Image 1: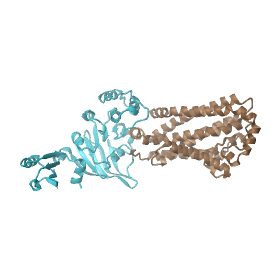
Image 2: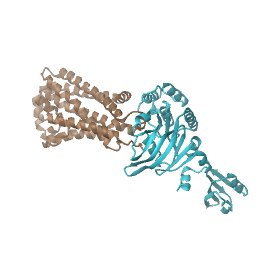
Image 3: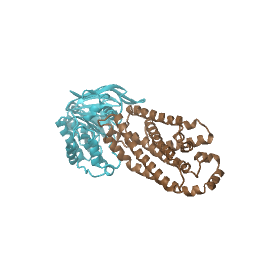
Image 4: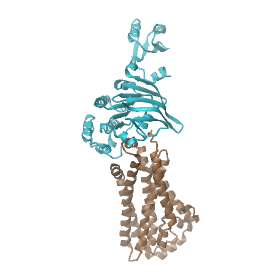
Amino acid sequence: MSIIEVNNLTKYYGKARGIEDVSFSVDEGEVYGFIGPNGAGKSTTIRLFLSLIYPTSGEAKIFGKDINQHGVEIRQEIGYLPSEVFYYEGMKVLDLLKYSESFYKKDCTKRMMELAEIMELDLKRKIDDLSYGNKKKVGIVQGLLHSPKLIVLDEPTSGLDPLMQQKFFNLIREENERGATVFFSSHILGEVQKMCNRVAIIKEGTVINIQDIKSLQKDNYKKIRIEAEGLDEKRFSVEGVNNMVKDNGSINFFFKGDINLITKLISEKEVEDVTIEEPTLEEIFMHYYV
Amino acid sequence: MNIFKHEFKMNFKSTIIWSLSIAVLIFVFMSLFSTIAADADLMNEAIAQMPEELLMAFGMNNVDFASVLGYFSFIFLFCQVCLAIQASNYGISLVSVEEREMTADFLLAKPIARNKILTNKLLAVITNLTITNVVVWISSFVFLNMFRDGREYETKTLVMILLTIVLFQLFFLSVGVVLSLLMKRVRSVTPLSMALAFGMFVVNAFSGMLGDSKLELITPFKHFDPNYISANAAYDTPLVLISVSVILISIVGSYMLYQRRNIHTAV
């Protein structure tokens, strides 16, 4: 069963584009990545799901129900973690969590306490006094305390230190094993690859590709930079290499295919330096989807 | 009920501060009454020296400083200014505060319909305003009797003046809400609420100065003019009805606008 079903969803802000003709579906139990650069329309899509904004045209269904007609019912089972978290002035962490809990039908106190412990939250502190990372943790707990069937994450890891990120990912994985579907928006390819089964790639308001993670990894381009004297770029003109750029004794290119082929070619020569890294998302967009 | 409680708490401190301030204002002004009333002739003479326009602007023409209610309606104008600012403040920030502080993302992602949110918010803030209202009633009666210096006054007329507070507050509250919803983004509340409250006050002053009866149609300072009520022991009913209509239209409009409002990120 599809948990989320989006059909030709379009949103304009006056004349400015939000998203255009977005269609995709997310299956039950899936961890679905939603990836794209800033301003591509990720938040717009998520805000449409939550009826924070209303679509210009098209439709979306969550749990098989239309988002505009059954918003209240749908939101009973959604846990949402916004990208920016700010909470009410002068409120203590515990007050905020209790306020959050009061909106749900079931009793969530136990789960709330568990989560607060996992995220190492100090419940007695005022939210105003918390650091950005700690506010984010409050956001995580309030978003998950009612054990939602669908978890919507909008760039959740910004501001979290690596240790907390790890805890957070573990938490999301546990929720997923429990049966929750996860919709995960991010502009960091690495974390999406780590977490998700499938990804939709969005750019300038339209979904340009939907892939499962395995094939995305097969498509895994490497960004390679070689520094050496008297380099002849023709040596590296093998299949899978593209966007070769030569400047000042170094060559840069992208490579897709068997990495051993390239390492062999490199090892045949005396080189000063070699870097092999993941291309950034922007580079992927620039080189493969234009 | 949870939203009601939360909203009520958020405004409670400010309600107490406003209520006490107005009570102090009434206390201070009323404590001067016996002195002023004793020298009412002198006072009236001094006032007669001032330009007519200035007096009209402050509702000081035709004020009988020797009568309790004449004096009280003069100071009630200052209470009205405070009440107007308070109610405008609450009205303009009612919904916009959530968008400015990004808490709209928190609240609207919860399983609750928007019109329920608005209803709860409105009821909470009306409760806050009612506390202020009650404090004004009590302090008016207490301080008026404390300082009236043995002079008599008509209780019914005083009650009539104080009864206008409810509609007066609702006017600024509902107009504030609908204004904030007509705007794409409210960056800061105070300048707007000051503009609304003082704007209405100034319009009333001008309509007094120019004798232009069209301007008085829009301002509750004229609709609920305490001088008129104390002088006539009656309301200016058509003007009161204008206030009531503006309140109703603003509230209905607010529900319609809020229902379809796009909540943008605060970036």
